[in-house]
Length: 303
Image (cartoon, rainbow, N blue to C red; front, side, top):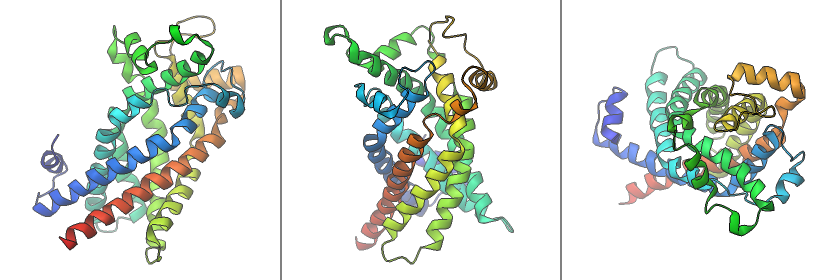
């Protein structure tokens, strides 16, 4: 979908200024997303290994000792650009339209706009998330396998498993949305508050990054149980159905199973890691996004 078509979908009256702003959003969002993907991906891998059902990794150190911390990163990089662009085009576009409504509180406008952005981007992200999380577990088990017997790429190996039924790559879309909506609805109003509160700071980029990190860490902590459920549902796709791996279940059934078999504390597995990588990732992501937009805007003014 082109920028102009996307703007028409949001009922914009497209002008050269709209197209210029959308181009800035595309470039800034892409730059921010790729920066985060490579820097914080290993922390996400550790979190997935700790949250997995029947995981042999009971501690961060145990998960860290296994190799393949970047297993599956290719699938994420492949969808990072379209997903981040879809999110920011939706978020920035709707934020302005909703904020213009009389008596609309800004936090509510930001929550609605960011939630709509997540619904759109999750449709693009879900297949990559499924491939990524399976590859992260393959990368861990491959550390004990002879190099000659390992597949060329964990991501390629996972895609082969889904070849007969590619629709299963969207397993967990609803749980991904269920996790991301409250996370985003919490994070972005907090982030926008920090931005407006410290907008006159002499070092705006650093302040923006710190505000994004604080907002992301808080939202990550509160939504960790949803993240554990999402991980279990996605890892159940293409998993052999044995006594240790029961048939795939809904998010509600997965929640009940975790509480009954492992206790309610299992819903918080990987919570500290998730807070750490989300704080780092959010700070880098939104900080670099804000910096890139300011840079592009200043560059255009100087031309």
